[in-house]
Length: 264
Image 1 (tube, rainbow, N blue to C red):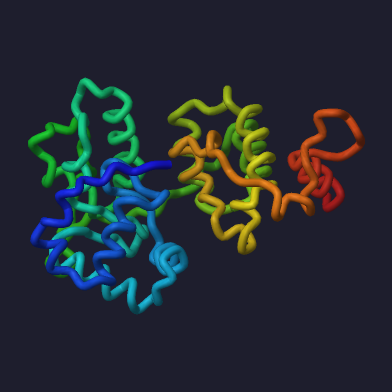
Image 2 (cartoon, rainbow, N blue to C red; image 1 turned 60 degrees about the horizontal axis):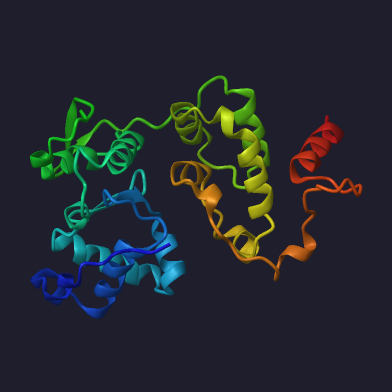
């Protein structure tokens, strides 16, 4: 995955004024694998500490410097970062670019309960983004925020989503993943997704550090991560692979179903 970086960031007076630690975090925020063209995306602070090898104190110090420079906002409730000028630096984000526009609106809808979204819409009001933030903002200190309502898991899920959920190795954010699944009508993609998850579960990337780099299921769905090209070999020997040749081995989905049956 590649990122396009505007070289003019290095003559930006705000960037030049940062210390070296904050500059490293800044470059990370606009280039890491979790980013989105809007600049608004899910990013727990431990991710940064782990991927950059910086202490938690160093990460928080860098974030404070960037927030003081009005270069980012961070929602600790939802663990969402907003790199404020990131969308400005994207080329071709207009109503004519339907894919980019759709991706932007989808991202805003996913995080609509964060106080960041009204601030984002105000920052980019010249773009006339056709998205209305939830009403009833509150004041928290000196920051305008929206009532924070946690995502509630629906009472029922589709049978095909449950198949995906049972196979996916990281069981977090089921309600958020279901919202994306239902909105994108992914039931028709179930066979493709099962194969992709089974394959990626055998990858070095997903097995490394006890699954540290497995994306959240909502991230996997929202970013189209089923097409990721991962590395294989180092960790794959201990994982049972799908059985396309009928040699008696079970696929990951079959193993989960059998284990569930044995428990029942």
